[in-house]
Length: 328
Image (cartoon, rainbow, N blue to C red):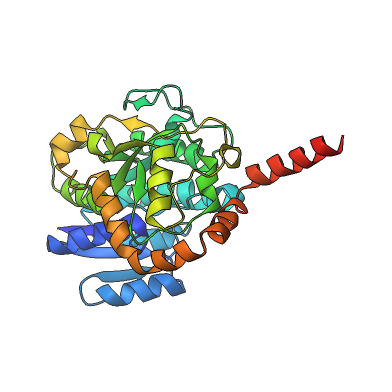
């Protein structure tokens, strides 16, 4: 069976690629040619067919889709870039998905499509954290990425092809541990359910030959053993990194609605049997990964906390407002 994997050299893409190789599939990968992707591709050049191209180019996409039995479409422009450049993101995310669908329709033997969507499409779930696949889609007004995923899902549902839509939760990886300003966009009281990127790759690879998944909408999340509040998650991670268990001030975090929550996964787990890692497994893996750097971080803890807070525009606004109040 020939499988096309788009976005193969991203976070979820790499995990999926490794699982597909383990199963001895005939794999073709399709990704944009840049320095990082070329570096990742070298590890797999003798194991898979590598095709460079742009999802916005219908001819590139047609060549990638040709002769494949299953398409796993993981590639996407994600936040923060999707928010900074919404037109570019829409051209890749929505336009690229449309190009894939049209290329699939042109095949004599129509391939099947496995598509990764996002929990973001449900919009704010801070007051109602339990998320079901039947819940209405209500992306936040300022979430361009979520709106684009909704458009992609509609294109797929109306395509006339065989498909499965996998809505992913908050995906974690020990290879993606950089502290990003996006960390301050999630309110501290948010409920989150992580899923290890390796489990996501396992689920998508298991979906390839599963005859029961087609026309289904599935949640891909870690299950009850991966649930935690964002406040508790941050406290644990900051301690692991050596920055300390003391909370960052709440003024540094957004209080707007946020899309994460606890996702129902009974159906996806029954079909795909992928939930192998718990949140404690993840914390332990991060501890091993940062063990050496943690010693240094503990020595510069006050500076590290100041550096993190400097990434929060909410905290800067709070300080500026506080200064103005003292001047009045």
